[in-house]
Image (spheres, rainbow, N blue to C red):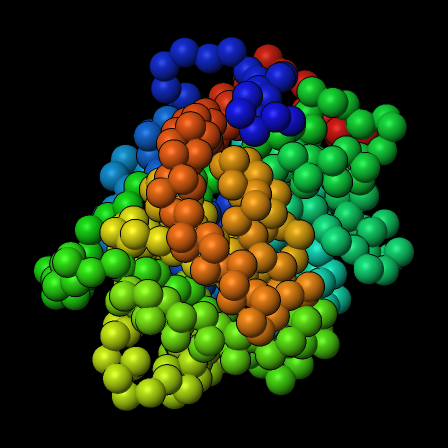
Length: 446
């Protein structure tokens, strides 16, 4: 796919006006788990359902307990509920995938999650955008495959929304992915590279009209201005060059270098980058995009704290930490106020790209370059598996210096990408209605 041409909508269902109310299950896009990227995916789908299919019921899977209604009132006209599911040793619990499997075999009425799978017009699956891989280990792969398996057991249409496919290091992982892709009713990839991988997984018998090149749904998320206290933090530096920096807590873990094949010390490289930006007159806004209460685990706050500790007192005064408690739409607004942004979390950079903010990535997987190429700025990705230290900093500073040129390219590519992100969800909802009404056959991709 040529990014300038935009994603193909071959096979899209013709539709006019709003879709009638649907019963949907959404997996792999939990809201409220601290990962703002995953939240951005979930909120983008919720926005689309509220906009295109009012009156629908959407069961959003998360790792909570029981069934909980949406009390925020953010999505008027849509009945949103949160349904807890998890890999759990307490197999007798209704949230346990083991219990759900048993219920689907013996009778779904005894299990809340199984009931919702059985009643769904379609099961939409996002796999957190980039987790359909064994890169994060076999346990994570089993977890992200569980709702896909449940949809197939229930005999409901499985829609793989735009995401990355692979890499798969083991032959067994790849076989699992091939089986699930081929059994799905519809599958989207979020960039050209991922679409190539999707076609390979589907095999030569795959229906090309059901294997679609799309874009990440988070491109369509609307920014939301946070409260006055937070917006004032940014506006206090209107006279300076505002640079947003996202550091990944995932990459400062002791095992990260071996797990992700990093070329060098991520912490020291990013601290050196911050120093160089400060020397060029920038005020740094650290933007956490994954936050674990207390700052532990994979929390980006952990990485931010570690980098700030390496700065001198004078350098530290030129930095501000964006509150980690903001939701995905509020964080996106903050990022949109930057003169340049650099990040390691994929969806932090998508928040920047989609708001025409010149952006670079210090990345650790191939998924990043594919998304940046969709926006016409594939050369703004520096691979942390190949480059570190002074060389990486020099490349990123070159990106900072050509930020005006990047903005011009983004203006040429991104608006159509944002439109495409919303059109593809409209197509999916129209297809779900067509499946329910029997106007479109429900079948496997291959």
